[in-house]
Length: 336
Image (tube, rainbow, N blue to C red):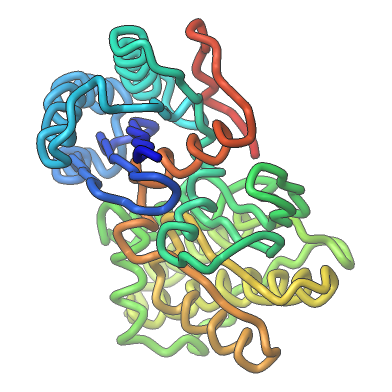
């Protein structure tokens, strides 16, 4: 039986990504062209610039991926491309490239959900991981608690009602003058601070709710900094970073462990860009160990946006008998 090759294309935000997956979980190429240096100048992602940079990068990345894998267009069996969520202009670049490749090579195409991709990144990092399990998906724009019932069947149990965890990190970091991207900068600075120095709110919402809300916490941190500045009181940025981060992590860990116990599952997977956060990983790892739960999270390079997870997602849906229409649209506000 010959090998099955899936090419993944991801352009949902500011990283142009192409990957090639061999058979089910053998990742052979994973390329990322980052735009962070450009958007750092503006304190965040500028959609118009992001889409222009994707246009410049995507075709050379596809060519390089095929060259590195020693494959030709005819060797590709499936094209998997992100259809949403994300920035409209950025998504259009990737999906146009995916459609062109699919049509030119006469190969089937799958439109992949970017957030589902984050979940599937764990399959690449852990060859033994199989559903069912609970997953916490934490990224710049989304926070989800999901029951993964099968490789293509998901039940969303909780999600953010306002600011996602990663979004609150970026906004607090901007207020503190740390720059973009905020998540890694706050995580690094927090290691030097005292997490108990400021008692920021832990928003749990209604009793038994699995939803998230980080807007109030973000506002509390910004107001605290304003008050210190207005009173000309010196404050320790590391202490604020540590206190803010623990307020976020406390909520994420509490709700994740409550759901895993309620579900009866024995596996918890962490995914999304914020899965790279050392404090969140450490706290979840500790909680899972104490409760005899198996804990999974991707390698750092599979936490942030990448095409490997999109290839994995597309492969699983194709194996389930799905194929996307060649006239498929992009969905900037797509949910799991």
